[in-house]
Structures are given as C-alpha cells and as structure tokens.
Length: 223
Image (cartoon, rainbow, N blue to C red; front, side, top):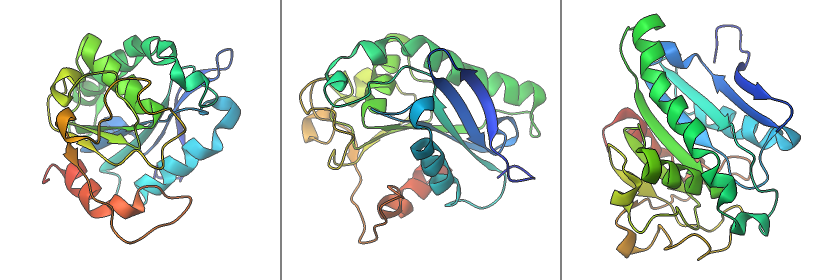
C-alpha cells in the first residue's frame, strides 16, 4: 500500500465513468501489475475493482509491488453488451498510451530511475481489451494473463504482440462474456498460451487465490 494506506487515483472521467486506481505508486515500484476489469466495471460499480486490486496487492509484501486497476474505458454492462467488441476497440489507444507511459515516468521520476517489470491481467472482457490493444498497437508488457477470458479478439497468443509470454486460466467462471463471441477461446491448446492450473484454495471475493503460486512467479519473472 501507499505509506498512509490510501488508494492513488491516477485517472478519472466522471462523464464516462472511467477511472484508474493504484495501490502503491507504480513509478516507485520494481513490479507493476495492471488489472483490466471486464463487463460490469466502471465508476458505477467500483467496489469490485477495489476488491480485486486489494486482493492482488495483498499477495505481495512491500512497496516494490504496485497494482493498478485500469478501468479507463466504457465497459459493457452485462453479458448481452459483452458480445460487442466496440467497447474494447475504443479502449485500445488509451491502454497502449498508459502502458507506454509507465517506463517513461519511472525512469524520470521513480525511486529506481528504471522501468519496472509490467504484467497485465485481463479479467473476462478485459482480456479482449488487452488482446485488441496488442493486435493494434503491441502490448508493452512483460507478460499477459488472460483471466477467465472467453475471447481475446486474436487467433493466437502471438497475435497479441506481447513482448513476453501469454498465460491463461479457464474461462469459467468469467464475467458472462459469451464464448465464441470474440474468436477462439484462449484456454484451448490451439491458442498457444500457457494454461494455469488452479489450486485447491478458493475464496469468493478473491479470484486470484487459486492461482497464487503461478501468479507470484509470473509477476516476479521466474515462471
């Protein structure tokens, strides 16, 4: 967390309901995780985003780790709207710019004067945002995790144009995005991503606990 335990507000658009939050300053971190929420996210329903960010940052100790909740797009509100890729397509430029800016501010203003390791986690429809961003602009991240994603809008992991590996969890449970609406399921062998196997632990408000050992290795770059 930040030194006084507060959430950092990195971006905010009340007219469209977009926001970006962070636990720990990404400029001063060695490891930055950018979480892209899926259907139903936004300022009108911000509590789940805070829960996800808090759940993930609690898995790592110290302020060398920053978790960013990137909800800087107008997300579909339900599974019916999640059939439409236009919500994700409209977000690609903003996500690409945000990711490209992280190493610039870290190198110029950060504690270590060097870029952090960046891992992007796309939750459900958020995986489509990440996939389309990579297809159109390249994804400036050291790894991508498609978490409960029914479709990333690309035919295979290489087409997401990530500078590092792509990982995937089974799409059940996801966020209601219909399978097949946005191309091949990322958790199929033909997609070419590394499938993460869940462990036995579970907790309703914490989607990451079943994948904690794998996520630690991915974030640290030891996977």
